[in-house]
Structure formats: structure tokens, C-alpha cells
Amino acid sequence: MPSPVETPLLLLAVLAPLAGAIMVMLAGRRPNLRESCSFVAAALTFGTVVSLVKPVLAGQKLAYHICTILPGVSVTLRADSFAMVFALVASFLWIVTVFYSMGYMRSLHEHAQTRFNACFALALFGAVGCAFADNLFTLYLFYEIVSVSTYPLVAHHQDAEGYEGGRKYLTYLTATAKGLVLPAIVLTYVVCGTLDFSDNIRTGIFPSDAGRVLVTVTYAFLILGFAKNGLMPFHNWLPGAMVAPTPVSALLHAVAVVKVGVFSTTRVMLFVFGVDKMDAFNLGIPTAYFVSFTILAASLIALSKDNLKARLAYSTVSQLSYVILGVALLTPAGIEGGIVHIANHAFSKITLFFCAGAIYVASHRKNISDMKGLGRVMPWTFAAFAVASLGMIGVPPVGGFVSKWFLLIGAIDARQIGIVVVLLVSTMLNIAYFAPVVYSAFFGKPDDGHAYDGVKDATPAVLAPLLITAALSVAVGVYPDFFINLIKGVFT
View 1 (cartoon, rainbow, N blue to C red):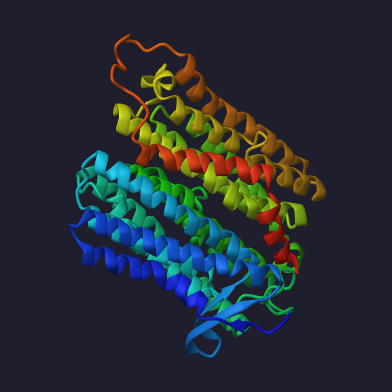
View 2 (view 1 turned 120 degrees about the vertical axis):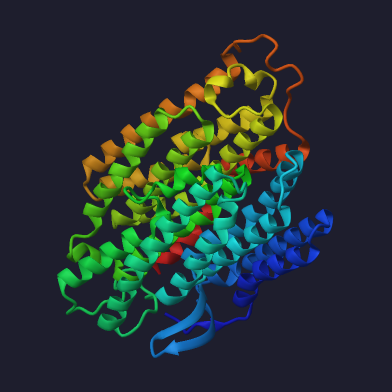
């Protein structure tokens, strides 16, 4: 592996969202200036991340050392193929979400929009920091920044429901991080003498003489401790966070928070433990079956939810585990399928939440049972919802098909017919909870013939972002090579 190339661009990519948060606070009650600051910060972040793509694709490892805490413990940034998948998706979708938030928050005359935009930027500061973390200590530092900065977003409405959702959110995520991740980091440092991620996904960082029990306990602590990954039984924070405004739900469920969870989990699996160690200690396949329970159970719960955002929330709980399952199969196709699902799920799921928000802005309806026939007066919104649903189900040409294709091949390569069955059953469940929403919206009849008088698709500021993300969810399915080529760099 060539020596890392030091570049301050990594620091710029991480600090741009932080600078954006400061500018938003200084802009205060001047909405146009405030949102311009958010857009400039988002564009600068994305542009900087894009500038790192070419050297990473060329096989370079980029790094930036900030400070050393102890020997083997530092705050250091790195850009590799794995980091770029998450960083590109998060930074680009922040740009889209800035526009959507502007239309959504203004349409509903929401309060505290300055705080909202500032915390949004801080959450992306943490997310991009997680993407570019070079070691477990740096990853943990930025992981906690994401947790703290998104609490005000969850509790945004400042009512009893909002505070309860916020408390549950913060309690789950900080308790698991401090109670499980921190001890695991200490154990890793004691055994390995370093917290730096390996450059080789096969070897990891644990020495060959590390005890099976110690490695297994450390592994379990890290997998469960990164509770943003939505694994049951530490998933309840996620549906509870649905009290937040829809742009926050989109951020939580598609971009920053949950993706930080599965990214951190899979980063640890591949670059701390490594494929060979996981295979030797029989950690991979049991993990795949463990997360399969979450995939199926969350899908069954989603079927029972009439509230659209609640159904989407449990869909997220289920879909996140596809990422972990793919990596846990320890086959090249499985790993590719898991990692590419970080991007494919993000584009489709953010579209679904944008649609839920657009429906609420236009009709003030939250329950699926109250949306019969609504698609006929909001055709663009529900067309985008239908496209994104196909992505969640895994129907070509939407990106989710690519994910499931690789996951199925990975399961077959691993000779795990049980996982193949899980993937097929979960796909049927995806159809069961998404298809009725679309069918009812376009072909159902409202109980009151005048229920939708005056209702139409939301304003362009709300509608345009969801159409863009819907189109992109198709684009990553038709042209998957960009992300696939990035992911192949993980194996070199």
C-alpha cells in the first residue's frame, strides 16, 4: 500500500459544514442570507469531496493528521474508496435537502429556523467527519457530534411529544456509545496498541494471537454499540424520532444519522477485524442471521403502521440491515452489495420522506388510510413515491435492484440458502407495505368526494428536490458503475 498523501482538502471538507453552522447563526433572522449560507457550505463540502474522487480512484490513500492524543491514538482523517461512497452521498444530498427544507419550513411557518439550519449543518459536520475518520477514536468523536447536534432537530417542536422523542433518541445513542463502544475501543487499544484502521480488509488490526473470546466480545460491543445502525433491540429511538419535521426525518433516515450507524459498523467489521479474522472466529455468518431478524421483524411491523412516516421509519430499520448483512457474508459480491446499498437506499429513502413532507404540506394528511385517491391530484409527488418504492423493493431499473442482486450473489457464493430465503421474503414484505400506498393513492376513492378540493402538488421548492432524488435513484440503477468502481477499491 503506498504511503498516505497529506492533503488539507480533507480538513476543508470536514470544516465546511462547521463553518456553515457558524454563518447560519450569524445570519440569524435574515432568512435569505441564512439559507444562502447553508447552500454555500453544502456546495463547498460537496465540491471538496468531489475533488478527492480522482486520486482515490487512482489508488491513492489521502490523509490529514490533526493531532496526537496518545501513541497510537490520534485525530486523523483519511479518504479511501469506502469513505468516498458515504461522503459523496451525504454531501450531495445535503444540497438537495437545503432547498427542500427552505420550501417545507417556510410553507408551514415553522419556528426556530435558524437553530434548525445550524444544527443541520453541525450534523453534516459530524457525518463527514465519520466518513473520513482514520481510526476508531476519530470515528467515535464525530459519531458523538452527530448524536448531540441532531437532538435539537428531533425535539424541534418543543412540545411533550418532541421532548420525549428527543430524550429517547439521545438516551439510546449516547448510552450505547458510552456503554459499549468506548469499552470496546479501550479493549482494542490494549490488545492492538493502535486504533488506526487497517489498509487491508483481509487482515484487520488484531494480532494473530488475540484470544477468540476477547475478540468476539469486542466485536459484539462495537456492532451493538453503534446503535444508529438500527439493529434490534436498540432501534426504538428511530421510530420515536419521527416527531421531528420531515426534513429532519429525511436527514435521519437517509443521509446522516442512520448511514453514520451502518457506515461505522461496516467500517469496523472490515478495517478493524478484517475478513480473515471474522471468518476464522465465525463472526460473519452468525451476524448475517442476527441482522436478518431485524430485516424481517421491522418489515412486519411496517405492515401494521397507518402513519406514513412510521411505516417509512420501520422500513429504514429493515433496510439498514441489508448493508450489514452484505458485509457479514464476507464474500466480494456480498460486501459490494452491502456498501452500494448505502448509496442506493439513501436516494430512494430520502425521496420517500420528501414525498411524505410534500403530502403533509399540500393536504395536511399523515395517515395512509386518508390518502385514497390523493395521487390523482398530486401526480408528481406520488409518481416519485412509486419510483422510490421500487428502489426499496429492488425492482429494475432503480438502484435498489443492484444492491439486492449483489446481495443474492453474495449469499449464494457463501452457500447460505437461508440468507437467500431472507432476501426473497423481505422483498415480498417490501411489496406488501409499499404497493398498497401507491395503489390506493392512484386508484382509491376518497370517502368524501370534496376532500381534495384545492389540493395539488406542493410548491416547486418542495417538489423539485423529490423529483431530483427520484431521478437519481433510477440513475444509480441504470449506471451503477461509478459507485461499483469506487467500492472495488476497498479490495485493493
